[in-house]
Image (cartoon, rainbow, N blue to C red; front, side):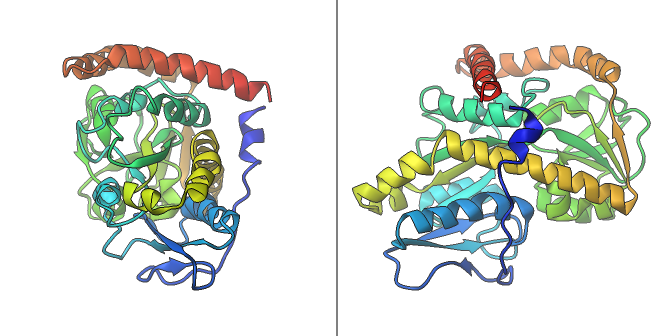
Length: 350
């Protein structure tokens, strides 16, 4: 099945939402278990509506009303993007989807998925990462009940001022997250600025940064097309996120509800659904930026090949740095390549 065909499989659901400063509740009162979900975006953010919200609604319905949920978004005490994983670990919240690149070194093996030029299809990459998590990544995710690892669609360059060549940043300060984007920015002569996505709009508006390297999904979520006038599509790397549940909440469920979570709301299905949401929202974000009149440049295959050649030493260095910490970085990198090829073949055969 083609990528565009897979994109059409997941329909974005529309609902009325509560204000961002209050939790968004679903179903009637009286459920046996209330699942507290946190995220850094707003309750109307396309990724939340398409992804986590629809998943939790389906879980609530499949449980026969025994599970309901409430959501905490940007503007609440639980929205800090750097704390999403830790809040689930501590049981402050019960479930979250959030970035893994804001805590350097903690997810060193997992972050190899963000090495430039590795992932071409985020759906295949997400499924492959989720499958490998049970063995290769078990130690990194031991503190939560992992539901899925989700890779974003490719990161693009969103610039406040036009850039002639995306490989010639010439000292421009670029918002990045994670070692892959940091190394890529440095290789192109830019200055990496680690920064959570909710801070990008103001930083770009004030001239603190010159641009942001982020997926198209972030553009409508954080209104970046208002401050970025140019968007350059190079498709050089992806981002890394998790969907996970606290051990406390999972362990509190009776066996039949644990089985429901494990069989229908974990693994390949969740990884694929969330990854396809990224693809859908990318298409919508690009259309909205075009309608606004922003400049969108698609990097030619020749220019991308030239960039890839420059990045080869960076890729080797990133793998070697993780290997030097005692982790099996190169073996995992090769295992991920092989598993992505397997998944891609499975998807193509559908």
